[in-house]
Length: 188
Image (cartoon, rainbow, N blue to C red):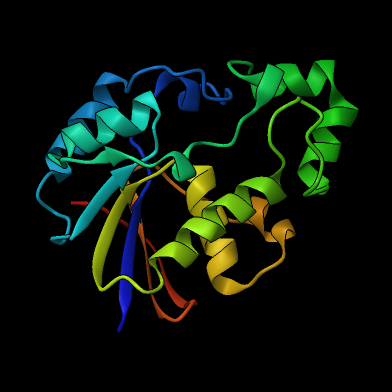
């Protein structure tokens, strides 16, 4: 039996435009408008879930999806960096940021490491391996990255080499834990 997972990245927020770690802000007007325009473009699914973040809840709603929260799809916990811009963290804690970006086990911000988020998302994928039909998930970009890393069996160092633009879909299909990846295509 083949399982199919469509991962949708959320629409644009002010934090994304300002290169800040997510701080729970809402979609901006442009992001909401683009998500609403893409409503109805997704395939039917047996399961529809979302990261339990504001932007994923709002993106799912704008897409017309009746999604439930999936705690396993929570965004990467950025600890004390939450809400800070990448530029500010780079200026204030350059060594810590460099370590976090180069060592998958590092979590100098007091939050979650890249390996931890990859393991969490990988376990979620494993739980879907025996499920027939399609799962649609509106998920944070780092969750989509982690899913691609695990699906390909790539090292965690590939996490930062995977770009996930807003409102794009990545499709995974597989059997017994072996996944194939169809990389991001725009919605709409």
